[in-house]
Image 1: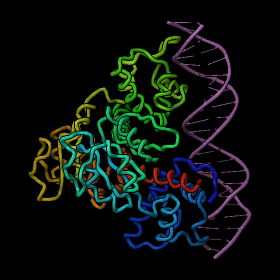
Image 2 (image 1 turned 180 degrees about the vertical axis):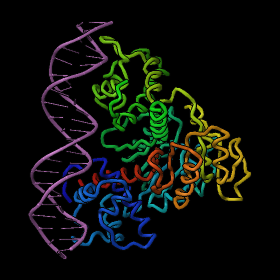
Image 3 (image 1 turned 120 degrees about the vertical axis):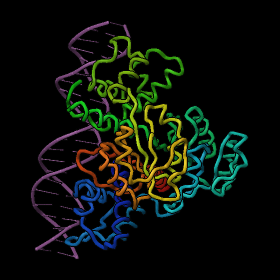
Image 4 (image 1 turned 90 degrees about the vertical axis):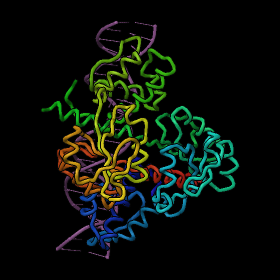
Amino acid sequence: MKSEHIPRATIQRLALYVQVLETFRREGSEVLSSEVLAKACNVNPSQIRKDLAYFGEFGVRGVGYFVQDLISSIKQALGVDRVWKAALVGVGNLGKALLRHQDFPRRGFHIVGAFDCDPFKIGEEVSGLEVICSRRLKEKVEELDIEIGLITTPPERAQRAANYLVDAGVRGIINFAPARINVPETVYVEYVDFFHHLYAVAFNLNMDNQDR
Amino acid sequence: MKSEHIPRATIQRLALYVQVLETFRREGSEVLSSEVLAKACNVNPSQIRKDLAYFGEFGVRGVGYFVQDLISSIKQALGVDRVWKAALVGVGNLGKALLRHQDFPRRGFHIVGAFDCDPFKIGEEVSGLEVICSRRLKEKVEELDIEIGLITTPPERAQRAANYLVDAGVRGIINFAPARINVPETVYVEYVDFFHHLYAVAFNLNMDNQDR
DNA sequence: AGATGTGAACCAATTCACAGCG
DNA sequence: CGCTGTGAATTGGTTCACATCT
């Protein structure tokens, strides 16, 4: 693999390719060209080839790509060809929904700890996990070998959750709370915010309305 | 407002600015410079000024921006200075969590219809809404004046949900299901997929691990 | 023959640097 | 004087076009 800098957009597209390739596999495809995959993903074929080229040569000239092999190769490139263990902090509506979400284990992300600071929630069981006091994060992260943290607290408690996670040695965080968080440079944060998407939809509908 | 093409990234950042500005407002700030806002959003100050320039001149030279005014201006630019009515299709774990999510109404997105095709779910009440058969979408969309659709079905039923929504005249869709959907050009779709973010985190942690 | 892999050309978005204004 | 607003410079990402290989 080339150690060039890999655009963030490439990573996002690779995740998309896996999703679409898995659909092709379910439907029985064994080989496909970058052109076919491109159409299904709504991107340019050479975009796909460039994205893949960061990690190696996975295709066969004159033939295309073997679906199963390509899925495996991309997953390996992304580092999702293994199990990642995660802790969830904030057992509200969203937190519970994520804990119950079948796709997490199915996709290799095992949520092995659920944390909250509300004494009424501590001890409650959600989806086979006992809710534990957030203060005990460090101890549990070490015990369970957790590498990823999911923050699903209300926004005003997101920073505190982040602090606990960082202190516990977690180096990857996905923040579902609508608030920015400060963490050391060594910690990687992804923000998930539905409302940014809702705003984008509203903006586009609004534009269309004005054009008429 | 200039009718230039506005980059998608700009729209996403404007949504971010609103989020961060609302935090500043809560904390009592009345005026701030692009530099201060930039630091809080982790972007370049001139980026902010450029983004805003697509829509008008909102600042005061030598002073900065008035927090409250800027929030209002951006919301107006994005088209979120009003209420948008939405239908949710697919009342599973995620669907229920979204229906119960206080932030939707708080941010101007009112989910006024919940739909599912499972006869066991139809008639059930979730967060004050009766679950209605998906086939009745068209009728309800017209009756309730719905403009946005949220798809929270399993992936294999996402396309059908999209078809119902399009047929009902909905022109903006947010798809939470991990599947691409085909819709006419006139319909705007946003995809929300946690796993793309999880993959990005996994990739970065994986890289860090290899570097050591 | 037909698809990949890739350097070159293109285009868009970000950042710089400073003129313009309160 | 200080910060905005913006043309110019730069960076980075995407697309093209074709050499390359099965």
